[in-house]
Amino acid sequence: MSLTGCKTELEQVVNLGYLPPFSLPDSLALTYGQQVQLTLPAEYQGRADVRLALSFRDNPRLKLTATDSLTAVLGRAITVDQASRRISIDARRLYPTSTLSDHNGVRTPRTYQATLTATSSSGFQPVKSHFTVRVLPAQLNIAELGTADKIPYGYGIYDGKPLYYTVDYAGLDSTNTELSLHVNGRPDGQVALAGRRVVLAADAGDPAKKAEWIYDMLPTLSRDGYRVAYRQFRVVLMPKPKFFFGTYYSSYDLTVLQNRVVIQLGKAYTSAAPTFYPEKYKGSYALKSVEKDGLPYSDSRQVFSVEAATGKVTVAPNTVLAAGSYKLTLQTQATTGLTLETALTLVMEQ
Image (cartoon, rainbow, N blue to C red; front, side, top):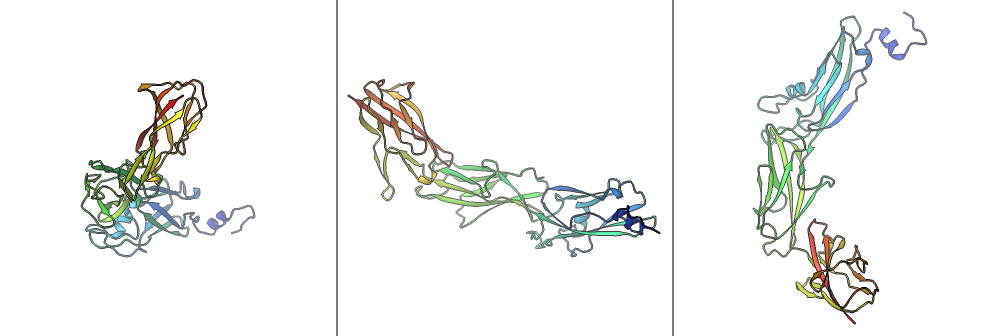
């Protein structure tokens, strides 16, 4: 047998009596619920003499459930199609690796082992390829909260009403699964799971309703006792933020209002910034409306303005305003999502 210099390396291997080598990845990391396909080299397409087979003998001998061994689970989840020459891996049928079952105390291995073998009825030598699969738990979502943060935060105020948060399975099949809820810290009996809803009771949080209170929760989806998906999230309960013109002395819970100011008509004026407490939840400010002597006022000349960052009210020097009381209503949306309003009355005199 002679080899010419124009033949490819792959052709040389075949001509020496071996099937084409596989080009499979050595390892794959999948998320529970994910499905992937691996396509074999083009040289395997249309070859009726080649038979493909998967083996899972390199895995530990485990019985993952009352009815299924690890080998049986892998055999259903990792398959090869003889016609299309594709390997399909269905992580919906697997359990996350290195995961302990609450039902039987069995832990899945760190990785799943698979070996693909190609044999030929035409006399070519067989080839093998070994690869591993690691499966990570999927991520649940909380319908009422965003998905951008690793640990989403929800906020609520003490208003005598319960709060509800819905666990979103994010497209995962819930058949034969169980949803549970763990509350980190010392449970106080004020948080419960009702179906897919996490319920914070009306009396949740600080018994005196004066201090912030954080609930750190972990909804978990399990199948056969193995955790397949979860999502940690937190809810902060607090008194309604204080938003007004004046001074707040937090040590004494004392409020001093300064929401009525007498200024000279036509002159420029800038107010002090309004108080917002707790300050860490402060958002931006906007002017919602203006009234003069109790009636709506159209500020067509834009004499009044509010600094978005601080909430300071500014009156531009002007000749269009008449003497009287001007009530300016400011609006702010706290970082918690709560919208608050307060008013400053400017009494303009000659």
